[in-house]
Image (tube, rainbow, N blue to C red):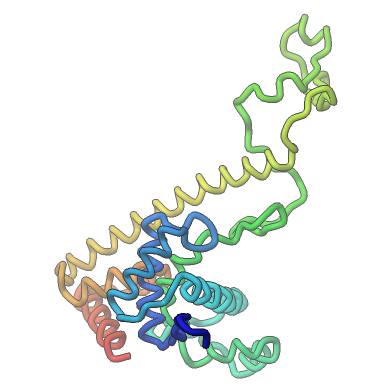
Length: 282
């Protein structure tokens, strides 16, 4: 090694370090420091400082970015497997897919990495869901979750006057007022060069989807708040282990469904307590 040159320490990503990493990344994502497919420079700066403060391990930006890039395909692999398991059972307590040996053998034959999820859940799933949510749009050919791929244009409406110069209305149409759509020529004028229509269409689609997503997120938030109130009324007082467990579990839809299915207050609190003890003893 050259004199005066400091060797960067090797990053050790054990279960503890990975969990702290994911928890901080979740915080930075919720704080708005993940504008694209990874954290911003501010997000990574905060991550580096917080990670060192907790673990006493100083990993520079590059090693933290490498860890993010390693976790993303692992999470996507879990999502692919879970989509393939639609309609099968899911053990909420263990966090694993319950399927036949034949189904698992078939999936593992397709990708050996699936074997990691056969007996063990995806680690830090709650944090990963936040870290990598809504970052699947990468271009015009991207598939947006929940939206079927189609070649047909989507009419989202446009109240602007941006294309008025590109629409030629016949003299009769101007004279008689409103006419049927067949009397209007929607041909774009070659004299005026504007943005690519496909770019405009995709931009409008993303705007519509963003609005739809925000409504969905609001519905989820309202649902979680309602269930948290039910947990408190059942006996999981604020500050208790059961109340804390509810804040962790209710982020996932299947956990909210399980909580709703329990009829008595005693049963609800007992379930939260059991989940807390199982998580604590892992």
